[in-house]
Image (tube, rainbow, N blue to C red):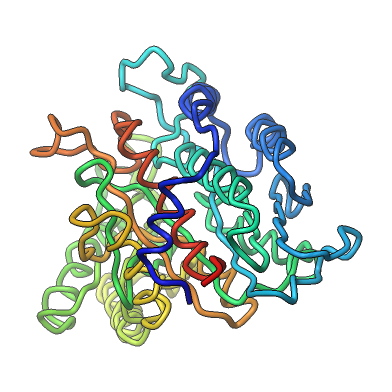
Length: 413
């Protein structure tokens, strides 16, 4: 691999024009589109990619696309062929938004009831910037660079949908996969970690059966609302009393639905849970306890039917390969100096790791701080209506980090 200091010097001399990034970012931010409906966003990304010397494959799993940058003489007709002169590196960015009403007050705020409240507009802008830098450094690197733009991360199925649509057969096989995410923290700070960097997750829908009756006659009913309330309390006892101190697990009750009339005890209730964890084996133990507690509460209240459980929206733990993490961190230290720090693993979740897992290759995923200095005491967090990265330091750092990570593997010695 190239010495990290050489990559730092290379990035200092690139000729890419990045002045378009602010306008591009603000346009994406002003026009957010929800998962699987990102038609306009995808077109804007595609239009920008067509300015570079790359092969472009669109319509992968809906609006997903891949731009393939090659250093050697490989026929564009053979999209799956890698450049024999060097390794193949894939970097991914997502670009869907959320159903959040924006409350940032900026002049480029969305007004359509949706919002880029997780920073995916920044991810897409930064990866395009990294493409511009890599494209401008022809002759300084050897191999194949794949810029992958993924829709529908927020529904946890965008990566899977691209894979189901033949992604593996449509692009060269990468030797390593890369990704990044903007997060709270000093804007422009790069945060890295070996091992878990983002949590695994599951959503669980639990349906509880009761017996309906008039609200004035509770003795004639089996009240599913009361059962659900008892379960909500007991779930936290699982975390508090069955998860070892020092290990991480979260159970949150995101939804509780029961009845629709004030004077009727309903005949069923529904809980929708969300969990987060870094250890899948611990998750299995917690789920066994969860079933035990829910079933016991239903029996204790004479529920007429066993409860039902539906697991969905599973997300894997994003667990960085140590050797890959060390290699890229060495480059980041040379490029960013004191602005790169050890990360605290995020409790949020990602679907990025399905991509490297599909190929069976190592990966590295890092975080970039995005909080304006004046908000560091109480930083807005992802998915809040006032979450807005401080553009200049965040975009500069995430663009440079993307290019630096790719060049860690492709730059000529």
